[in-house]
Figure 1 (cartoon, one colour):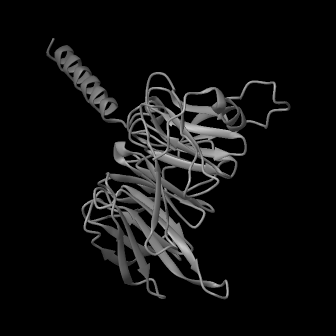
Figure 2: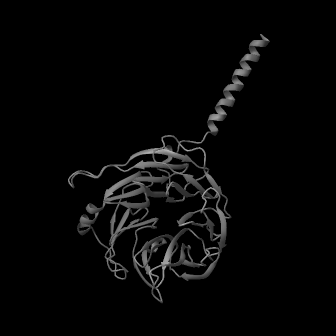
Figure 3: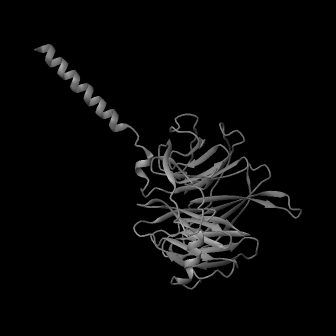
Length: 351
């Protein structure tokens, strides 16, 4: 009897341990494709990488439509790429690697091969950061990250397996998003690098880097009436969102800078451009399209509601407008059809 009780007790103990272990397993990232933290989206090698609550997933772009009369195809996927310790805030891809802003844990450099069929479990490089990693950008061998109240920081990633710290810089605001641009000199050759920072209620910060990229030569600030959250390089300047107060363009080559804005329906969370057309992920208002052929005189904005959920990120591949939307996952629209239908939509006057 005692041996039977012992065997029963051991069986219950084993089942309990097994249940606890299963409860601690990381979920498959494909289960959370519609979570609110679905805020990373980029194109890489004819595929779409998307960030979720738990890591990265891959979608494959379908073949181009044979004719304009056929419906826009959906992406094929998702396929899990890698599980990560926190939500993916932003992504940047270079050949063979994806740089991930992974929140409080910092930055993750993930080897990427679209032909891989199983989730990645090794070879991931971790960079601990002073603040939560909200955005990353790479230019050549320079990696820059936006770290919220801690400003920005940079690393040399000539060897991506061993990043070397370069500098940290207080931006005086809340660094949400970062972009890097190579500046051309009078002879057209690269002259230096400029880092642009979506700096929250402090506007847009501009950092001119030294030739060795190890320090900041000059800082500047473009004041804004709203909370600047997202940037996009466009023509000779920047498109930027300023909270619920609109989408703006600034020509950074002018002194003083000249700013032109259009109203948004919600907080713009993602910006893309195709030629003269600017497409914004306008939160609960859906997609926002603006003809911006004259940077200082934008056309009237047109909204395309998505139904339930909010537009978080947007990117363009040929005629496909790819949107990451809350509660809807990834959606694909035809850019030409969106442009053609703008004339029949109600328009708001630009500011």
